[in-house]
Image (cartoon, rainbow, N blue to C red; front, top):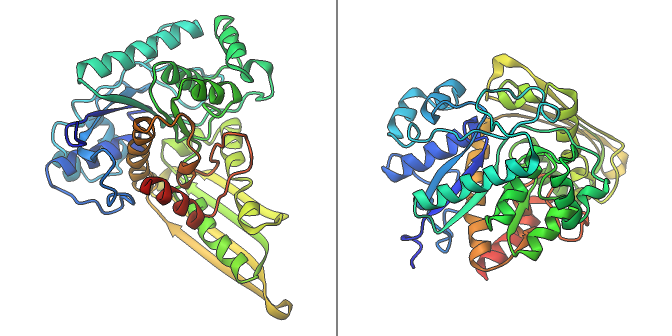
Length: 392
């Protein structure tokens, strides 16, 4: 079957969010020829399933159709939303799994009315299979774009092996978060899984091993879109020219739903943890004064501002500074990466390459590895690895 004839379903956790609605609108516009492939970094790779062969569905705590959701997010102009045709309006979110203990600031009434963890897994698996059947899909991939959850104690025995995880499911162990439930349901359904969030998910040892056993591709975590992407470009350049980084102060302000969720201290801490090792790995030494702040500022909406102050020491001990002010569009940066990731994990599944997809580290702040080792973070090196994999 040719790539043009194949249909790949993308089941999104958080399908009603700003990133998801922006990505889906982009595909709808591509279908009608109303936009080009600007901003899609792998549009040149012809071996991947076409963007226009992606079919979307998914779960969200808000039950509004995606056309209504897109108008509320105000990422896209009303005319752009209308030009995307009936594609957005045709997607109505399925009820989602939620647990306020893991994400206090994410609320909604469109919730799966099942309390047991095993029952929730079965419900999600049924959704995936129904989606596959109704749209005659060749494959379903699951992409997690949900709000950031707090991290549980990741050292607990329940999360270390597939067998222990199964027992924890049956015991309704509270260490199992909604993100883990989606990841497990995807893996046992044979659906490749992408975690674009900072939440603990398929990267826990139990699910990494299960994905490898079942030959299901998994990738994550935490999409590298704005400030961290800039950091993984600049830091290797400084190292290359022997410019010593004495300190790096980063701050972000944003006013979208992601920012509102991060206004909770536990969710914020999970987000900051995925940013932590990037700089040190790129430079090859520890930067003592590396500070990162994220603040919710409602008037900014999706138009995030990421500001960096970098203090350097150069030749003859002379001090210098670099200042970067990235006035970016959060969802406009993230949406293309989500589309590329859906195509990439479909390709990994087509090649029968299961387990952690290390070559997809290009897309993430905290890329998962098969053995838990520290990943490479420099963007140019990550792209080289990914391009080599695609060429194979």
